[in-house]
Image (cartoon, rainbow, N blue to C red; front, side, top):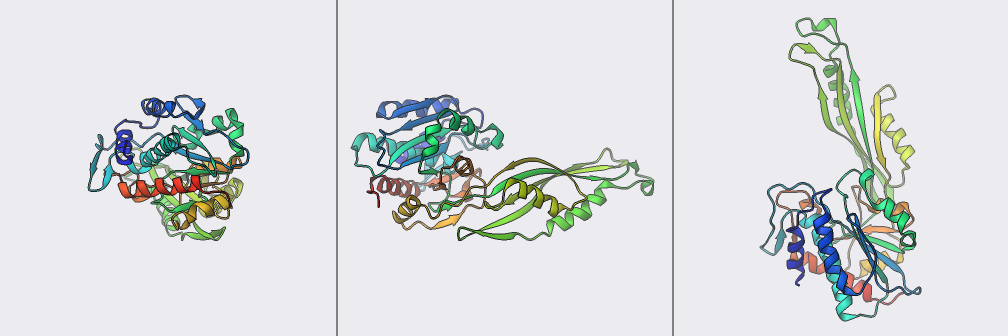
Length: 355
């Protein structure tokens, strides 16, 4: 099957988060006859490896099965040199490249400079607490000895090393309720919130250089709620905050910095913190992959599962055909030429003799 048609067939199988089973079963059926070693096959994770040779590095190719909710963008279609439809960029194009690479290995039996693991997993688009990867690493501890993980997230065929950490919190502003006809008898929490939010909105991004790459720490107000009724001055306003922090900052440091930014007297409840990913730009295998197409190495100004791989000691990068500009959009797409570029680069990488 051609790579574009393969990607389109994956797009056309709905797999919104928590409903990935049909796609997992389909991918399992495609991988089953290829002669790979099936290490794990559940509704949450599919793991296959090539025959292992201890003299070769082990590289994990990883991709998530799930998508965000549909936006009237199913079924997909081929149009103007692109596969268009839900998940095309994030990241069924990457899944298609993985499967096509497995077929190439099964058909051509090329001499390989690396061993490969093919990992397909669920629930990446949900909070990290729902990720199946921690359980996978416990069940398959040998996987943590891998020399590199390549997560085929959309990067427009750049190599993105490291990733930001991600902190979520609730910030509460308090006042004193009153009748709206006599507001001076209370304190309007909306006014309290407005003054503090204005200051938080003016915070500048902070550049942090890690491994020669520039990451930007940013604090954003993402949601706001408050009020009781049209005739009540409210005593409480709540905001949701999102803080993205550099990969060299620990989770405890991120907590402290978030509290510094909002003010020591603020009522801040931190609800989740996910660490960033170590920058692997100096890794020899990363350099080898970069040389297969003169791919630039950039920072990942977001959080991705590379953080979970580096958390168990696996150097990791993002490298995939999708353009992040199109991720999660109604007109989501991936260029057929980008699919071919990723596939050709990984073929050359797999076949290259060790340095």
